[in-house]
Amino acid sequence: TFSIYIICKTKNTTSLDVLIVETMNFAKIGVAFYSAKAAVENYQKIKNSTNNNEEMPI
Image (cartoon, rainbow, N blue to C red):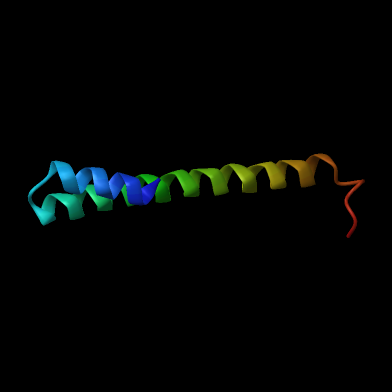
């Protein structure tokens, strides 16, 4: 999906600078999404380990 996005942007823009800015914005969104996903997973792990302390092997 990332390469398709770049191809579409290249057709629509004449300036390489605009393409770079758009690509950077797209990358930031991807990183933010990944970070949020990782944070949720970590929170769930911590929550599960504290709730099920007696069941967790040491």
